[in-house]
Length: 440
Image (cartoon, rainbow, N blue to C red):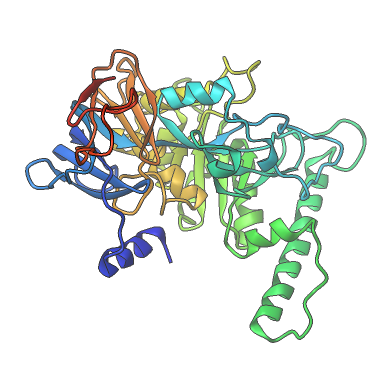
């Protein structure tokens, strides 16, 4: 059951949480659905309860009001390919295949890269081990604002991370020195994972009496074959994109996110588009390259995929570590969308590429990626056109709580009215007077 279905059942049962926050906005851009002018978002228990116009949607008296009536509201940005917020979780390169490894224990919410990303509206990330080996381990999907690392996790594991050729090509003389060797090792891992998942499925269905011996190295791989997590594959060129799809999707029937996909990767665009239900293209951080037909012109990579029929299309920054942060900063995901649009990607597609399409690729669109009842109340407030990078983000809510506010943004928060206190002679210094407006 999806989160939206569960939320609808709660409403029918009358057990939905009461609104504790109302956000007023000049425009609400839910990404999926109609834009709402002069809108209000009702939030309760960290979830969106309702969207509507200020004229028609009643604000409960117990709700705090975030008055951003001159700003636009959009969903929190979702990053499908990054390495930020991990302390010691990039590359461990002793073995080319590492199904035992996971970056989940490395979450670092205190990283300055996390704080900077929040300031630019990024709220959910799929942070991964690096691409120094064929299978570097498993990613973790988490929120950039939470009480602690465990509370931040949206899903663990997030994705099975693969780097198929290019980065992981090894010159040490061991297996993996060639693409032939890498293909052999990956296929062997997938065959074992498929057999292990099938054995457990037979046991759970009752056609196999005894459970198979537990293999800790394949427990997470099993989730891929159960359809619970996707493969994300770091690859380049037309050959690389097509080969990744052939191996993981065509041969083993897995959901795959082909990421990076530069250096002529768009040549496999039609091949990817024909498998749209379980193949996703994630472009970045390279957005521009010389057209591969010899025309000598610059081409927008996302646009080239779009023109070849790819609609499961997202954008990424591949941001990683403080030392390399200047190469592709996480906070530039807004900029990635703006530049993709500048080079021909439709603006609506560019906005979807950093919100709902990233969420759909990761399999978390029931929680994030758009503004809708039942979803997490991750909201970005900014002035004017959403893809205008000259307009700063003014406020970011994660789970209905203010995670960032720009100094001097002018947004006011009105505390909810409270019953008169009769058990105290004088108000405490932390008390907020009824109806008091606080300038943020």
